[in-house]
Image (cartoon, rainbow over all chains, first blue to last red; front, side, top):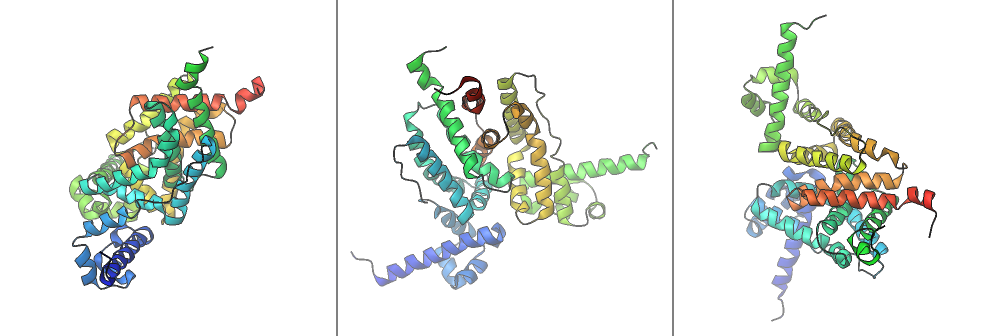
Length: 195
Length: 195
C-alpha cells in the first residue's frame, strides 16, 4: 500500500520534533528536554508531543535513536587512509552535531536506565561498525579491541577532558601508532619469526 | 602559628561536606547536589554549608577540586610496567570512586562555565602527570600526544560507551601497541635509518 498524506505528515512531525529535542539537549542541556520546551522550539503543540511520546523517557530514547545510521566512511581497501577517514568522521560528528555532548548525556542516563542502555549499545555498535570492519583482517582478541578503544577513545577523551578535538596530525599519529603496533604483533610474528 | 582547634574543626567540616557532595553527585546524579541534600547527607546544618559555599557552583567547584592529587603509580623505570600500572590506576579510580561519572558531569558543566573549565584543566593535568613523565623520553609532538590520548581514552571510552571497564588483557594490549607503535616511529628511524 502506498503511504497516505497522513502517514507522511506523521513521519515529518516525528522527525521535526526528535531533531529539535536533540538540538535542545545539546544547546540547552539535558534538563531542557521537556515536552513543553521541545514543543515550543519545534513549533508543535504540547498535545502532539505527548501523543507521540507519553513520557520524557520516550522522547529522550527516540531522540538518541536518531543518532544511529550516522554518516560513515566507505572503505577503499587502503588500511591507513580508511582508518584516518573513519576516525576523522567521528571527530566531524562531534564538531558539527556536538555528538560528544549527546553521548555524554546518553552514557550518564544509561547507567540507571536499561532502555537507554540498549539505545547506547545499538548506537555504539553502529558507530564502531566501519572501524571493526577495517580492523577485521587482524586477529580477534584483546589487541583488536584495544586498537578500537584507543582510536575512538582518543577523540572522545580529547573532546571531554581537554575541551578540544584532536588535530589531523594527532589523528594521523594515532593511526600510525596503532598500525605499527599491531603489525609488529602476532600477525607479523607468524610470518617473520622473532629476532 | 600552630593551628587552633577551631581551624581543625573547619578543615574537618569542609572535608566532610565536600566528600559527601561528591558521593551525592555520583550516587544520585548532578541535580541532587544542592545545599539542602548535601547538608542532610553530611549531617551538618544548611546554614553551615551556605556559610562555606554561598552558591551551588562554589560547592560543585570545590567538590571536583578534591579529585586533584589522586593516587598515582610511582614509576620504577620499566617503561611497560609503568604504563600498565598507571593506566590501571586510572581504571581503579573509575571503579572505586566512579570517577567516570564525576568526570562526565565536570566535562559537561565545563563547556559553559569558565571556573569549572579551570578545575577540569587542573584535574586533567594532575591526572596525566605520571603518564606524561613516563612517556617523556619520547620526542614531544603529535605522536606523544596521540599515545597519551589513546591510553587514557581507551579507559574512558570503554567506561562511558561500552558501560564496562577494560580488562587487564586489553590494557596490556593497549600499552604493547603504543610501545611498539612509538618504537617503530621517529626514535628508531633516527637510530636505524629507513629500509
